[in-house]
Image 1 (spheres, helix red, strand yellow):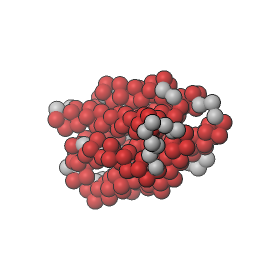
Image 2: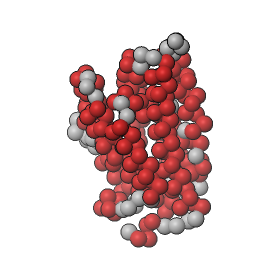
Image 3: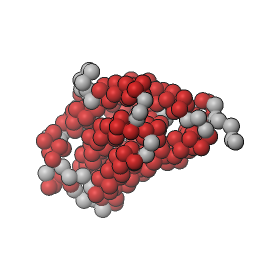
Image 4: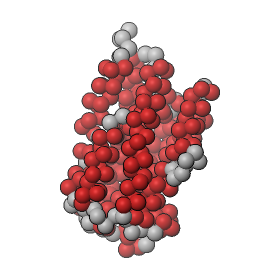
Length: 238
């Protein structure tokens, strides 16, 4: 039987697997970092990304429903409560709506907007994956967050430098996530390292993280194709 990876080896293999598929490599995000997105393109990104933000609770609920271990349910419920803003507002959904308003969008328009089909299919597939997979694989999708701190810091710096029309209060959500990411990702890593008792289970955990990477990549593919390559405008219909 193949030996289990150590924590250090697992983290290294995870990062190496994610690196070529991480969202900072996507053409849309490279344009964002360089300040080359128009106001409408940035607003379209915010609207479509909101669909993922608003459905993370459904993914977490599916994980909870599949998990037979009270100690894991307590950890995941605590994380969910905090990210929903019940422990200390605003939560992630409200934070993203605050970003949208700071970028000149009306919250009722964001809530009512119909996202792109590619975005909807990718996010719905993530939720369905959490429903049909084991609770451990569902939790492992959040291993995607381990390298997220570096990307988010770069995103914040780019928004401040290049997109001054976004009001400063819109950055509060990203700043709060930046402060939480290390803790959140380490909690997920601890669970995975404790409960993956075979090399095959560790491989499946990394595969789950890669599936989350595919979801975020697909979201940005849809936005890039529709609002940069083809230059359509969702906003004209709002």
